[in-house]
Length: 582
Image (cartoon, rainbow, N blue to C red; front, side):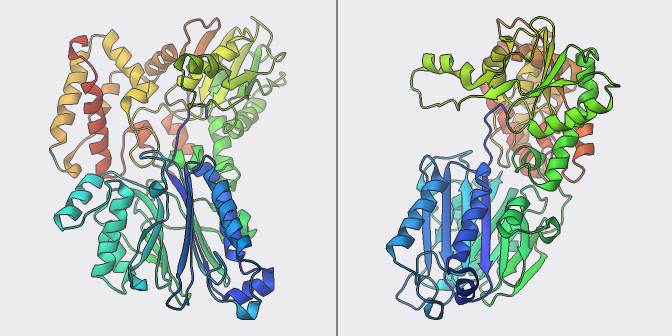
């Protein structure tokens, strides 16, 4: 993906179901659980590079000794730093005791229950306090709670206000703090009934979440929002119970076939008691599943079997539009992709192109090369502008100057900054006759409020293109009316709101908006003709039938709080504009 987008998090819960001596004798170390958790986090590091944390709890730790260990890191490479520091602690503690003498936490991070997390700082600061797991610590073990998750709430403010009215004093207003107190409150109200506590707490939340937690007495749990917005997968066998944000991470860590890793059903609660008894049951009222497409396709690792096929299907689906954009001229077209996540959809595009080429030669190759990661810590703005175009480089000799078309497929076009400032200028150096930029995602028209870093209308190139059309056609009253309705809606309950930004797009066809986006993406000195192709929402649903969470494309938000967020975003955008321009 060319644009830098961040996603909330990756989470892992691991419970060992046998005594530590079993793993020491069978696998040669009592730190078997820690080794597996480390691998599970490493296989999800794509989900978070702003922070990492690991907690380990021992089931039968005598009083006078800590019953859990916790380490976090917000270093520049947090997961590597975290694992190195824990390894140092283990080395300094000396060799593990013999299997017969093993007791929980007698050696660092050698316990039965583990909780791990990698964090992307979509919102909030990059500090240890923002890293998971977070802890509600009490002198009674059964009242201590360790919590980690992949989540965003749309109604944090209202839940925060409710808690403060009841006398609670949150240390911050972030949803992580609010969730921790809200869940702790329900656990106190329902001692010994984890299911009732979670059901009561989650009924107050609007948003997407996968939460994993450990109670101090050893009970552990994982549960998922009723719409299934955030993903979760699990595996159970006689030795372990494991939950993770991605299926392929579990498959790799435990060498499992696909059928042995199950999806945690939306609205369900998975619990493992201190005695090791596993239970899976519905916990939240059922809703229509709205699994997040962006998380599925554009963040999850592409080596998952289903995701691999879905990404290839996206590449195949855009081929009719691509061929039209190059006038079906195989002889004078080179096909390529924007590294690195668009590679799989590129393979699907090649499959479909090969099927319809009718013996004509198909020319393809890796034209764009990601040369270096642009460092935003360069303080001089002029130097940033100078270096930014060199994030990418090109392979010379594949494109015949002023003769060939160049088609490049990308996963999505969100802000368009990298495309306009880096990719297109560097591709233009090859002097292609025409550049066709292909997005294997539809036009991203609306902000996200469930974790993806797309919270502002002003950042979305599709919305900016829409505003261009509104200005050009003298339709300022349309914008003013949408803002007025959005302002009125903000005084209503969430369930009575509508997405008032929808009407801004209604006057324009898909192609009109595509052409306006193309004009926005075009650098000032681009020599080549530029065309842009977007996947349609209909093709997206056909390629990924099990994931209908497409609100950033369609404006159809899965929870009532989504409409509040989009209307607030529209009002915020309007505050930065002069209405006289319309």
